[in-house]
Image 1 (cartoon, rainbow, N blue to C red):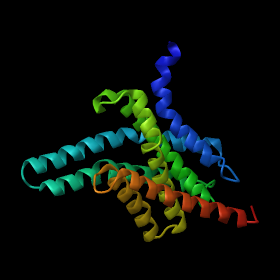
Image 2 (spheres, rainbow, N blue to C red):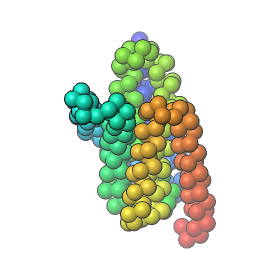
Image 3 (cartoon, rainbow, N blue to C red):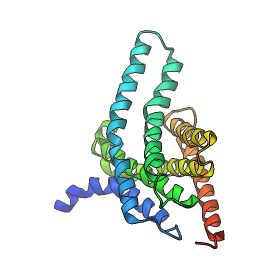
Image 4 (cartoon, one colour):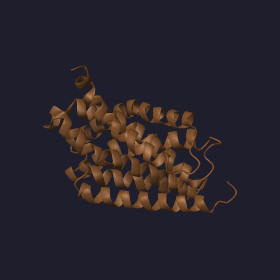
Length: 227
């Protein structure tokens, strides 16, 4: 009975841990656990400002829509672009760039993808908790919602983090790098949340891009004979 009481928590956090470990051990020269744990923890922490910022912008957009300052289409677009997509990806970016990219341990492309997936999965773990413990609000049991999100939202966050890390490292210090590292994950996140495209299609595109970038990064690592 005691174990059963922890099942919702474990089902919310386990997908993030499993995906993180898979990619962590794909790195030929794994990152220090201390850095990985800190990055994951920062990913968890940004859920707090993300919550307040998301609520603020949703209320702001709703107010403008109620005052007829925005059309339905404009309000719909902004509601899926800013709360969720823009807010959450910018917060992940801040951790990845100002903490991970300042570390001496991030010294090859695959590291950037590992840290990108780590901060994203930290965020996804806490976000998953909020959804699973409020499953009844979505007309689902916590177990059904846990299974659904384990194969959809959590992998999606992981992919967006890897894409962000890839562009940040590929175009280090360049405006192009900042632009792509933010724009592509934000766009994919927005399309995933909205009904402009099927979320399944957006998830497949996200996985394809992330796996392509990760595979290329592994090939580069194998060619680096000086490691």
